[in-house]
Image (cartoon, rainbow, N blue to C red; front, side, top):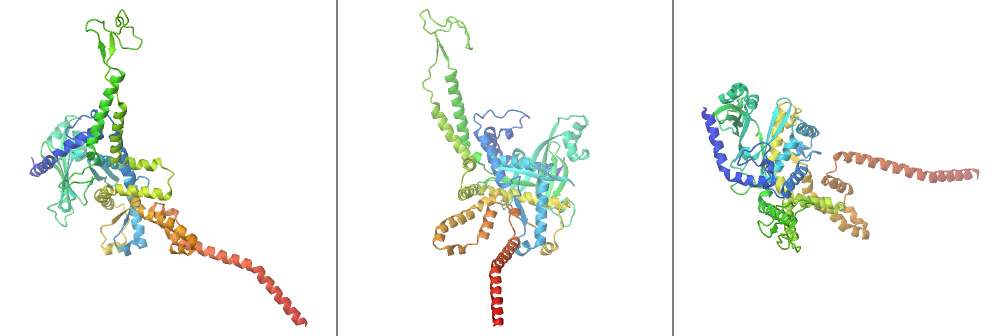
Length: 542
């Protein structure tokens, strides 16, 4: 038994106790919206069916679309959704600084989307968790000397604590490993005695609980090169034996925590699914009722004349049942008439609930863009502006406390691995130790759509005035307007001509125009010279 291990286990138990109410809430949501993660109040069994509470899949499908929409707006796989810059305007315009930052950005994306990193699938799981439960955890580590590794950690395994600024700076993760996995992860000598015994006896399925604690190093030793000199403390503990397996450290926080929105005095986030949970439960209850009514309408209960008067009969197709009619032809078996079945009312109410659920998960907003492909440029910008406004609160928070720390963690790992180019001396001399992040995602562009709408509407309003007085158009710079609209709409920079190229083309056009004017003037000059020579000849003859 280790005193440090006991202390970490105690702190983990405190955090676990503080969030007990959340777990029952998350479990209720998971069973109706995100069944494959319904393991909060119980460990469950691998492969078990968790859809017993689902009679309608609207919410589950809406969550999938919500996660896809957030991913496409924040971190699309097909484009670079951020770039690096520095806060100093003079430095940011230097060519060598631009080249360096562009190179680092390219390395980041290449490392992030490498096949072994598994970033694309794990970020999607985080967005799913955010939409369902309001919180998500991404662990960013490395395979030393090879590649980055990303892992979306199930919310049921992680416990958070905030600092005075409201930033999550303590994460405890409680998880299970088999004896074989523990030996692979920590090494045989560092494992607890119970793990060693199970491993020696070849008990492959024996599982043990562990804790990974990550927190600020409260006893940092400046100048130390080991974990005691690092700002972030990390430790792994075997719970059953209260055995401290290993202590280490990080220069940057290894967990990126995403939260949708938070309520006062709450650490964990709240989600769209929490807001509309009553509607989700009501829709499932309506579906169950409609199913029962439909069963009664299609296969109604049967009314019999007397319990012992009839022999057992078959309801299968083509069956012959004797004794179900009286001698005068009266039916001795009749279907129970439960009255009129107003399925239309039930379906209308269900569609109303489906609409509310789709609205909460922003499905309706993205459907508008698909269903109206013939929009004008101005209409498309207005739609993009609306989309950006609705996604701004969630997207902005995810950028600041989820993507930002993740990018800083990536830069730290790659810099330590020697995968980044040397920093320009001007940045070193300026003391620039933290590079700024500028997001260029579709969400950032959508938030600028109001600028594009203002430009287009202004041009539409000015056009009639230009028909009266063309001088009005001198107010605008067409080239700068085109460049600004291209930037707002996300046109790739490689498709645009640089200012130098435009000046070169203008000079070529001016030279060509001058040459054409000279050619046009040549006959006149020739005729004039001919006339002058003839005049001089006549004068000489006289």
